Structures are given as structure tokens and as C-alpha cells.
Length: 373
Image (cartoon, rainbow, N blue to C red):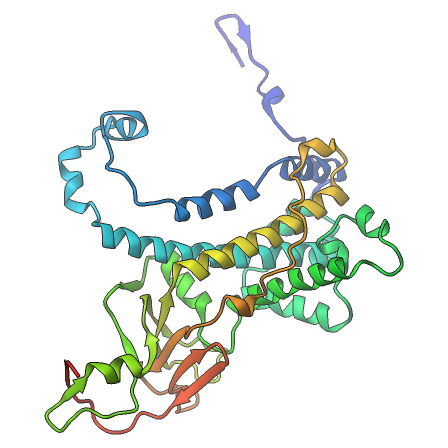
């Protein structure tokens, strides 16, 4: 382009070479992978986790810093107090964000593992491209990993650089073997969160991120009691406290119409999940550690640049295992309608650490009043 006697070469600004082929060239994939592996994505996960662990937010001063820049675009800051959340609402948001973060990490870990174990070798299109073209449906990703696992032992190089694995003695130290097995248990936990025979956290997460079609709760309580209300409808407080808590924390509720592939397709269901920030964040930290080990190992094996340019391996964690963090009732699911496919429904179920329990609902709904005693 010529303007005012000056010539500008815009082609020099192109970061990657282009080609006339329909597939990425080896030069392109090498440069793309170099860019990807030189990043430090684990800092993104840790920053989000650390934000959840910090105390309540201090009041925002719209006259300084980033806040001042935001309102500087013409936003009337007098309107902002109308939507300012209360402290309990902030805590509810933190619980919901902990749920979303754990799920984001779980899906990211599963897709990263799928890229390392399956997609890269089958596609031969580079690591970043392989991760990008991961199947859109989480069900397909999980299915492929489970089929891979069924064919034999998961390689230690998934969590450790190949050079480190080769340096191990013929009989590797017991703690290394245990740590590799522990990391795989967390991969299995991630797959369970995406494709579960119990309550479907993945559906709740999708409803959360696609249109915020969920209902948050901070006062909902659901439980089972061994004693019935009195004929007058009174319920003793001691009976409530001695019963089994089902929803006993902040919670998220979402609606689902089962898809065509399900045996009970067309059935409308409502699910309510407990949101306990401490175990959710603890799970996120473990998933972050495992994710980091897979990323750092893949970078060490596939990145030809300087070792200082890639993320540092976090080490191998010996625990805790997933079951140590799953100690309370997950929540419940209630079928609202019959299936258009089967003519039945999945009924009412509660998920506990021991598994899914079906509940037969009998008798009419009654109202009661909790009294001392």
C-alpha cells in the first residue's frame, strides 16, 4: 500500500506462515506448539482458586484504578448500588463459582488427557491443533479415554516427562507408582463429573454457562426423618436435626429435558446439588495439580525450545484421593414427567458417597411447622 510516499509491508506483521495446503504444515504446527507450550496456563487456574480463597471483597472505589477506567466509559455509577450484592449473595456466588471452576478444570483435564493419549498420534497435526479439535461432546471424549484404559496400562509418561520415566530403575519407587496411580484416579474423577450414572453435574454446569439457566439457593433445606409429623402438622426440631440431610448447604437447582439418546428421552427432571466451597475448591486444587503434570510432561516431550520457557512440573501428588473429599450427600434428582420414548421416568433419587439411592414417593404432600422439642 502506498500513501504519502510511504510503503507499508503488512505481510511482515503476520505471526505464522500461511500455506496453500488444506492441512497445517509441519512448520506451522511446530510454531503453534511453541506458542502454546511457552504459555503458563496453570497460573490461570491458580489465580481463580486463590480468588475464591480470599476474604470478602472490600468496597469498590469507583474513583481510582480499573474501576475508574470502567465507569469512565460513561457508566453512571449512581446506578451501580441498585445491583450491588449483599455479603450473603457474594458467598453464594463464591460457592457457585467454586462449582463452575471445579467443572472447568475437570473438562479441561479430560480433554488434555485425550489429546496426549489419543488425538495427537491419530491426527499427526500438532499438539495445540489436536487439543483444539477435541470432540465437541464430552461423552465422546470420555468414551475414547475409557476404551484406551481398557486396552492396557495408562503410561506413566502421561504425568511425567519421558526422560524422567526412562531414568527410573526397573522397579520404580513405590511412592512414584502410587503417585501416578493417584493422578489417574483424579482423571477418572474428572470423567465421572462429565459422564455420570448419578446426578449429572455436567448438565448443571452447561445450564450455568449457557444463559445462566440455574437457580441458586442459600435457604433451601431438604432432608429425611424417621419420625412423621403429628396429626396437627407439627415437626419436632430434634427430629429434623437427627434426620438425614439431603440439601444442607448452599445449592444450585437446574431443569433438564432428557435428550434423544437417553432411554427416558423427553422426561423433564429437576436436580438440586449441594454447593460446599471447601471440598469443591480442594478438588479444584487436586485437578489443577494433575492438569499441570500432564501439561508440563507434554511440553517437555514435545517442545524443542528452551526448558526455561515452559511451565515447571508441579511434582506428583500422593493424595488425597477423590473419595476423601466426597463425604456428604451430593443432592437429589426428581422426575417431573414421563418419557415420550419409554413411557416411564427415572423417578426420585438421592446421591450419597456410597452411590445412588432410589426413593419411592408415597402419600400426598403435607405442610408442617417446626417446633421446639
